[in-house]
Amino acid sequence: MKPLSRSTSLCIAAALAVLMLATRFKHFGDALHLPDASMAAFFLGGLYLRRHLAFAGCLALAVLVDWVSVRHAGVSDFCITPAYALLPLAYAALWYAGRLYAGRLDGSAAALAGAFGVALGAAALSFAISNGAFYWLGGRYAQPHLAEYLARLWQWGPLFVRTTLGYVAAALLLHGALARWLPPVAARRAA
Image 1 (cartoon, rainbow, N blue to C red):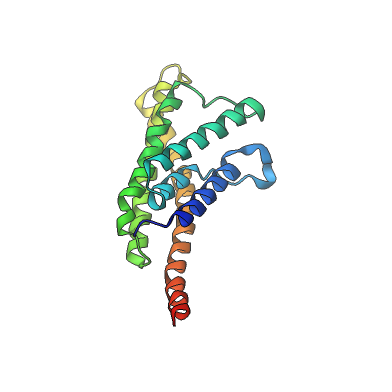
Image 2: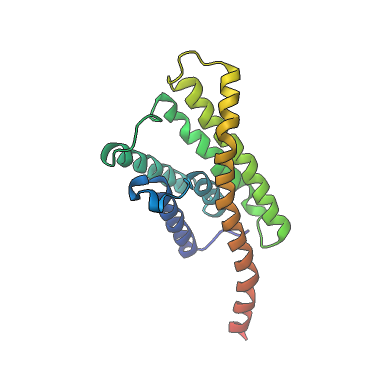
């Protein structure tokens, strides 16, 4: 996929920011409580936005939302531990996997399936990094051991990966539909 125009990039960045705000910030209550789309936002950001500065901006937004949630909205700070410092690495796995695949993405079913497969691998790696950091470095478990860690990884990993893939699948379906719809529209306007 060719790099996007500035206006398209800004629209995608805004959409990803809104998605992250709507799902990461739990202040809106249970009626609007959608599963956290942060992992998907980072993968899609890498896929479409690509730039390192955009990654830094997305990361800053995630940290700001967490800070506001804990400081001003009464959200528990249970997950804010020394392991939080490794969250950028977990998000980088998603962003740079998307960025790496971006050149291969087009509207074809094979390219979309490939992007989905890369998202699956990146989401699993990202979760393993963040969950592993929390378990081993977070200080929440008195005597961590491998069997307990693997049980927790298996308990929570599929949920986080499945949620990420749900958002990514929706975005890729939209991408495929737009890739098929926009060229005929552009050709009609040119005629």
